[in-house]
Length: 284
Length: 305
Image (tube, one colour):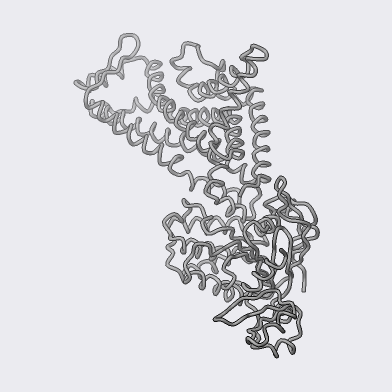
C-alpha cells in the first residue's frame, strides 16, 4: 500500500478561529475515505488544503507533491467536485468536452462520450439549461473521464433527489473506482455512503477524532440491544452512547469483548451515523 | 491545439455576445441605415463647394464624384472608410473594460472558479489568457467587423455608381483598400495595447473585489488624485490618467485625425507605426505586467470560496 496523502501537524487559522489544530492523518491508495464532521469542523479546510486552494501550516504531501507550491502539477492527478452548481452556466456541453480535452493530459474522450450517452444530456445544451441533477451527471461524467489518481468530492450530491444520489454513487463505484485510485468524500448523508467507504475520518473542532478502516470500526464498536433486565449490567461496561428504540435500550460500546456483550442482548455493527453521533458527544 | 489556445477560445465562448454579436449587429444596423438615408435623400457636402445629392440625380452625383480631383476623392473615400472606427472602436473599448472588470470576478461570484481550478491550468496561464482576450482578441474582432463594413461600403458605392451610369472602377482605384484595412487593424490593436495598463488594472480590481469591481477600479484612482491634490496641490496623476485614455482614443482614430484633423490631436505622431517606437508604449506594457502579476497572485492565493 502506498500513501497518497500524508498530513503531519496540519494547521489552519482564520483570524482567531482555529479551523485545523495540528492534525495528522494519512490516506492510502485504493481507499474510499469518508471525511465526516459537523458544519464548521474543518472538513472543507482539509479538502482545500489538499487541493492547494488555501494556505496552511505544517507538512502536507499529496501524491508526492506539495499542494501549496505544485498545484498545477497536482491537478493533473487529482480531480474534484466542490459543489453541485459549480459549472459555469454559459458553457455548452460540447465546449466543456473540447476544453478539457485540450487542457487535460489524462482526459479520456471516449469515456466521456460513453458516460454522456447514458444520460439525457444533449451535446449542444448549455449548462444553464440543464436541471440540477443533469449538471451533476455532466460534472461527474467529466470528472470520471479524467484518469485521476485521487478524486475529491465535497458534498457532491447536495440538493439532489434520492434517485440521482443513488445513481451517482453507483456509477462512482462501478465506473471509476479501482485499486489504483482513491476517493475522499465528505457528505452529510452518511447513510448513503456507508456501504461504499473503506475508511472513516471523523473530524470535530479542527481535530481528527477517529481514523480507522471500516473493518476496524466493526471490530472495535458494537451496538447491543439490551433486554430490560440487563440494563444495569450494560451501564457498568461504560457504553459510549445509549438510545431508545421501541422502548428498548440500545447501547454502543467501544473496545468491549464481544463474548461479554452477547450475554446482554442482540448485537450489531453500529451504523456510521450512530457512531458519528456517539463520537461527537463523547469528546464533549 | 495547445492549452493556451483552448483558453483563448474559452474566453471567446463566454463573451461571444460582447465580442462578436454586438459588432455584427452594429454592422448590420448601420448597413441598413445607410440604405434608408440614401434613399431618403441626404446630401453630402464636400469642401470647395462640391455637393453631391444622393436623392435626385444619381447620374449627376456620380459625374460630380468622378470630376473632383484625385486627391480629394482619395481623402473622402478613406474618410468614409475610416469613419466606422470611431463608433466600433469606442464600443470595443467599453466591451474590453467590462470584460476585464468581470474576468476574475464573475467566476468567483458564480463559484465556477472551483471548476476552473480543478483543471490543470495555472493561474498565470488563466490570467494571461484573459488579458490577451481583452487586449488583443476583442480589438481584432472589432477591427475585422469594421473591415467587413468597409467592404460593404465599397460595394454599396459601386452599386450607386452603376445606377448612376458609371463602371464604378473609380471607386476601387480612388483608394488603397488594402492599406486602409491594414491601417484599421493596426490603429485599433495598438490603441488597445496603449490602454493595456487600464485593462490590467481592471483585471486586478476584478481579482481583488469581493463586490463591485467597478468601484474597486475607479475609487483608488480618484483617491490617489484627491490625495495628490490635498498634499501637493497638484493634478499630475489625474492628468496622466486621463491623457492616457485620450491618447488611446487618438491612436484609434489617427487615420481620421490625419485626414481631417486640425492638428489638435492629443498625440503628436505621424504614423501609427510610430506608436511601438514610443517609450510610453512600453512603459504602459511594463505597468500592465505589474498589474497582471498582482492579479495572478491575487487569484492564486485569495481564499474566499
